Length: 359
Ligand code: NAD
Ligand code: UGA
Image (cartoon, rainbow, N blue to C red; front, side, top):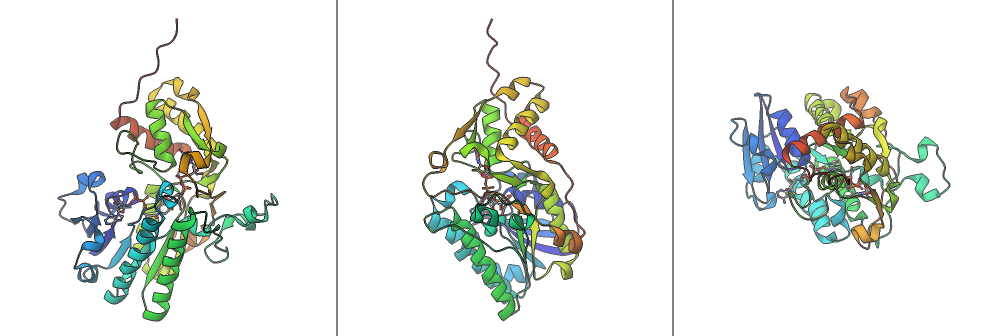
């Protein structure tokens, strides 16, 4: 019987962790989140105990952690539209509060699996040399070899990456000086159902790109491409990411006291191509070819996100470590992930009808 403390269990990744963990009756989960909207199907399960509200307002966290085998921390503000507009809250959430969890795990003598981010790598070396050099060493991101290259302070975009990087360094120091057992996970753009919220339907504001494009498709609005959509990302199915996490729990000796990239290098694409692929997926899911002609509209980063936004040019993970130590390898292609994700969105939200054809 394994007992897991899961902080941020009501979010995108947390809800998929619950789907996987709670299916095993030998696993018990103690979860915390502000919101249970995405996990209503799990409330009341005998192997799940949910604590609603602010994690940091709970008085008995240390005792509860001590009663678990592992603490998995997902709780964070991790939406790029907030990095340059709510810098104080972003640093509070991703370092000042998150370090308290690390301290409690060290005091309770419990293994902490902390979710960090691919953003700690910052821009690629190729971005800084500006030479258009395509040698893999200049853009691939390796846990031990790649330097972490963030932009200037006035580029507030990097407030999140910097806070996460300091959290990583703090956890590493707790390991060296106080014996904390840790695993640091650096996710590279997970995708799947239940990511963020659909603006105008499930909330207000600016979510991450998948939800922005999904909402635009449902509402038949142009898909906004920030600065033309030239940035590149690699995308990993969230369900496969959770499988990697499950492998860590199965193989603690391999997982402990290491940093792991989790991503799918085979699924690299530009954001423009992501938009085109999502139009195709929407057309395929609905059988309505008019989605193929929805416009793609370039918008400037300043107009879209405001002053202080900067973009990651490219994020290409090396995943040899996860492959060899966890026996894990991602397989699902981007079109497959997008199709499943849009099937889910179109099954719960009515799309705006296509304009009548002119006669
Ligand atoms: P998410 O926003 O969907 O989930 C985070 C959850 O934490 C939310 O449900 C939120 O309500 C909860 N939370 C935050 N602060 C809280 C508090 N004080 N009290 C109670 N609940 C609180 O985000 P996600 O995509 O599931 O990401 C989870 C983690 O993984 C984050 O640490 C994020 O930085 C990291 N990450 C995710 C991705 C990705 O592709 N999704 C990529 C890189 C890093
Ligand atoms: C994200 C977030 O910072 C975190 O969730 C996470 O830590 C990180 O990825 C990661 O995987 O490590 P980012 O990929 O920049 O960062 O965020 P998205 O909102 O998904 O944007 C991806 C790209 O699409 C960016 O170039 C952005 O400018 C662009 N975009 C976004 C658009 O072109 N149109 C939109 O409507 C939204």
